Amino acid sequence: MCQVNRVAWTKPRMDFCYGCLPGGPITPPPCRACDSLDYFSQGLCTRCHPGAPLHVGSCRGCLAWGVYRSNSWQCWSCRWWFTHYPVDACEFCGRESRINGQGACRLCWENARLHQQPGRAPNLETSNQHGQQLFIANLQYDKTGAARRRAARARELHQKRPPALPRTITDARQLLLFRMPPGHGAIKDRALTGDSRLLRYCEPVLREHAERHAWTRRQTNSVVHTLKLLDALQDWPGAKILASDVAASIRYGGTQTSTLEVLAAADLLVDDRITAVERYFAKKTSGLPPEMTGQLQLWFDVMLKGSVTAPRRRPRHEQTIHLHIQGMAPIWRRWADQGHTSLAEISKQDFIAALPPEGANRLFADQGLRSLFAILKSRKKVFTNPTRGVPIARSNTTVPTPLDTAKIRDALNSPDVTVAMAVALVAFHGLTGPQLAAIQLTDISDGKLTLGEKIIPLAGPVLTRLTAYLDHRARTWPSTLNPHLIVNRKTAPRTTSTSKLYAWRSLGVKPQALREDRILQEIFATGGDVRRICDFFGIGIDAAMRYTLALAKADPETESER
Image 1 (cartoon, rainbow, N blue to C red):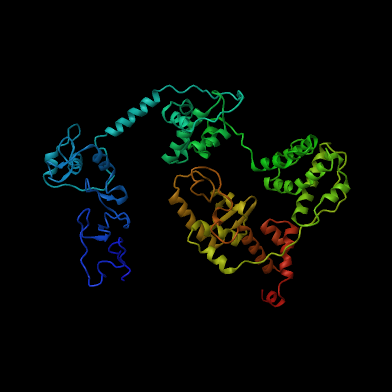
Image 2: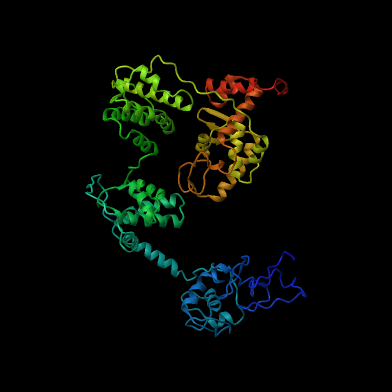
């Protein structure tokens, strides 16, 4: 009825509160748990009902302010008192509560400790005869310094403990005849109860790394647990730790990224991880003739790692290699099915006949095969290059279209300061997603952004959003050592950059589309000045000419207004 208070009861179903009951209003009954008159629903008050809104209250043991119903209205110390002491009347305040061996409740005990003289026992009588001082929950301090002395003694004993022997000092490894999967429970028990020499050896590096990168205690303890698991899982004591073993420890509750950083800092890591493009290449070349597979492997190694011997070649991006493999893989299979065992047998007619008729696959296949035969010819693995003299496949040219202005305005005014700053940098200065993720704090100085050899004066709206983001970054991660401008919860305790799409996942626009809109606006503003577009945005002539198509297709009246 009032749509404010909860219903009086739910079994049987009642759709009215006590104030709106027919024939009422009726005074709600007291809480059946604590006799409080602050009725909520189902016979319970707002303090006792599990579905009531959470609010701060006082501890039911020591009356300290700052506890919640989710902790049973108990502070940390009273939770221990409730499991160790009986209920009785306090000898000093008369309140019925948990009483320790001196006959005092915890409130009287904390007041006695507050006025305790150094070197003397707490005087319960004189400390509580003139009233008691209430306090905030979970903020009691150790006035006598006993906890500090215990911590200092533990550190001293830890420093005197002899360091672990450097077991992992060799790259040699005994290969296994067969692998038996270890018992899940047995590995966890060994990690929890056994002494780990690997942890003792890595502990100084772990503590220094955690302190320098402002790791939380939970993150540090996760690495400690993972090192114990790796020690229990290690097949050959004395060998370095494989990155694949660290990844396998996740199924037992380990953590991967932070542990890899610690092992690399301790020089105990052997990175045997296989990248996605390597797995993709192995999948597409399985079953091919051995000689053809060897030629393809040579091309793949040169593309992935480059070549320092003549003819020298720079390594290509993994995405470029993936697209080349995607276009060439069906052609390899077709040639192998036709009886070819080596790429040296391929002629110009075979190359032309193998290309797809049209589409993106034709472009990827043409570019990949030209790269493949150029490398094989330079390494003298084929006699002739069958791609020479064949016209290069051209991609289908599309006309860029501008974005909706309202969508850009909403993104610029996003309540998330990270999103607003990222959108402003792309919308005003046309940055790419990788450039945005790679910006470091030192690249911004005096209102200017330095990208390589180019210096960009930042626009006023960009500086406003940049200032708001830097304030948020300083408040959220004040101790981070990450040099990148954009950080998040995962990269703050490290020095790596975020994903290039980190700030764009919740938006309906991608950085490339927003960059294209910015280039289009510059095209319309300059009347198609291709040279200026190339210099300003760092693109080639062919890419800039693609944007001039939008200018040519524009309406003449609209173009005159622009």
